[in-house]
Image (tube, rainbow over the protein chains, first blue to last red):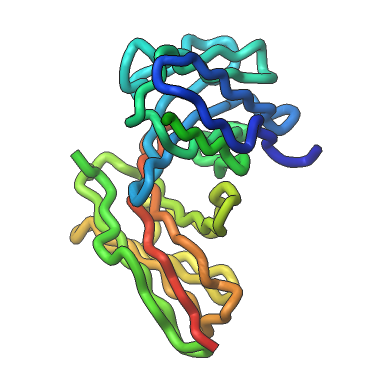
Length: 115
Length: 110
């Protein structure tokens, strides 16, 4: 596909369970970002991957959140022991990052609902 | 600490008229600004951007204005069309991290 692909598109889970969200970036894009959007709020930065550099994890809200990326391809965002406040749309984006100002290309997001 | 603020949660405009969406920022180190548009159930899509060395950038019906002294930018859409109805996010960056505002819902009435 030509765009950023995220799966699942929707996820409902019980409080306390672990969830894993997946992102397939655009082929050749070296930079990958995770954001989340809570209801009525803006996009909140979570984590940034650039090539083989150490990721910028400064936006992760707690140690229950972690993310991995294999090379310059797929990324997974894992939330352990989910809480109701984790309910949000989780958005992945990639960019070619040939310059720091390359626009981000977003996926359609994963809507996570923690009951 | 909201570094990028969009103080108007919503805006309603008649088709054919101008839409003006506003954004304020607090960090004077931001050097690049972008606008994204988002339809329901889709991810945001890039619309237009401006570097801090410029005060205006135009692309068709869309123009972004930057006032660095006021730390303010705006997006003008003219003429507005019903298909422009969406959520518009302002974003600012220095380096690799984009900071987004909360968004403004634009409704263009036909």
